[in-house]
Image (cartoon, rainbow, N blue to C red):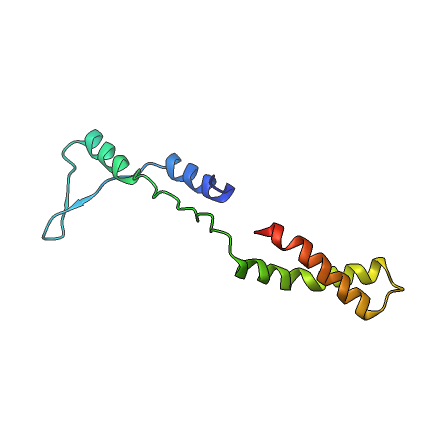
Length: 109
């Protein structure tokens, strides 16, 4: 979908009349032989189909990506455990974080 700015520009281009000017080899302007066919050809050339959008395919699951996600979520889990259970020791929070990662990471493949 075109943005508002692109739609305004397209509408402005369609509002104004354009003249087709032909220049010969000497640099002189030459009259257009048939105004209707020239403008129709110009419009047809201007309306080239847009190139097809390419989408990235879904990559197959890999343990490398799962481990990268785990490295991203491990600190978040540790901080969450710190906020939810402030009375636990550092070792207990680390142990619980490892347990949570062991449960959730295999399901992420």
